[in-house]
Image 1 (spheres, one colour):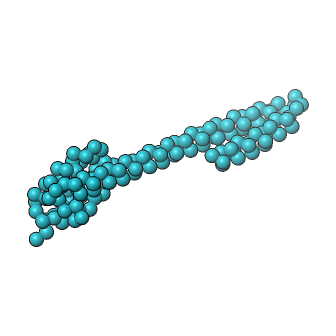
Image 2: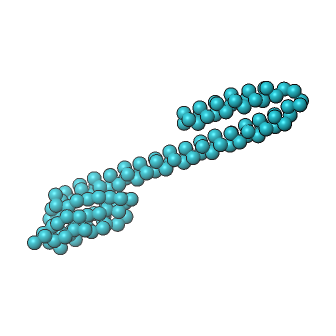
Image 3: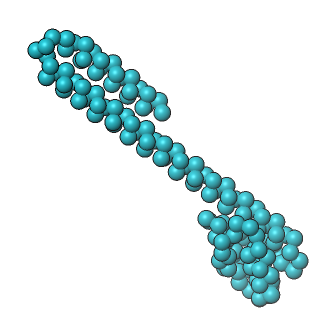
Length: 136
């Protein structure tokens, strides 16, 4: 934002000086060139402002996704803790764009099924990628 303001200020000062310096009728070509340069500079600053806005918007969306994924991960861990028969301390959880990845080792296929079932009922979970294994 500060760079855009600085560029705009420098452009205004320089082009204003050029326009005021061209007061005689014989300098019409110079006035036209200065005016065209001003228009071009204005468009460049406008485009830079739009690109900056897009970048900020994209960053905000990315942050929102990260916060959503963190909240889902917290909900998953809480759900696993409260699900009887599931050793939640043995299960690692990672969430990316609403997809929950479970990994670790449990004692039985039944525990895997309970964990996957419990996680799939949580709001915001798109799918569950089961990477759990049965340890002997």
